[in-house]
Amino acid sequence: MEVLVLLDFEGQLSDELKISAGDVVRQVQPGPEEGWLQGELGGRVGLFPQQFVQEIPPSLRADGTQRYPRSLRSAHAGKLPPTGKRPRWCRVTFPYTPAKEDELALSPGELVQILEEIEDGWWLGKKNGHLGAFPSNFVQELSGPNPAPDTPQLTNFCGHL
Image (cartoon, rainbow, N blue to C red; front, side, top):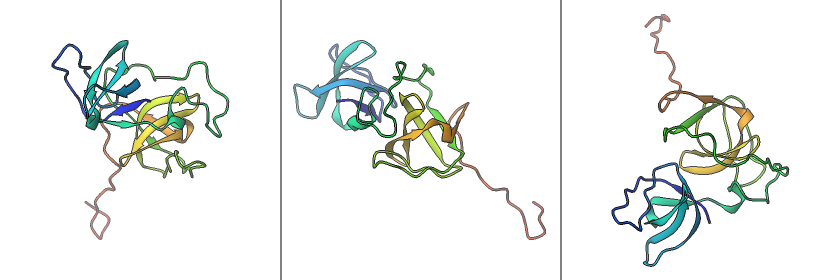
């Protein structure tokens, strides 16, 4: 099982894993106590609170094999290049209607957080609290801090500010 980290957790004990929002923890299994999970992140195995994460459906995992139309897997699928823990965002440029229930619907102008490349040309993203796959060529990646949604210019009835 793989999970997406929703909230930061600073492990206090040596067996606890430090996780940050946006991380993808792999090889997750139940921990020794209720409410705790154990998983691997960056080569380190440790415990973290279950309530701080959300399970990534098998079909959206980088190592999944049951995807359509993404049937040809890239040898380079996996994490996007490191970004210094800064969230990556993209703005939708073309509408997309999902072909599968684990894909995100896209409308031009929407913002999507990029979480991981799951296959060449397909990313795992989060939009309005929903996880899903989407085609990377339907969006434009943004640079800088968290972008603001497009806001129309304010004008009075004469067409002036």
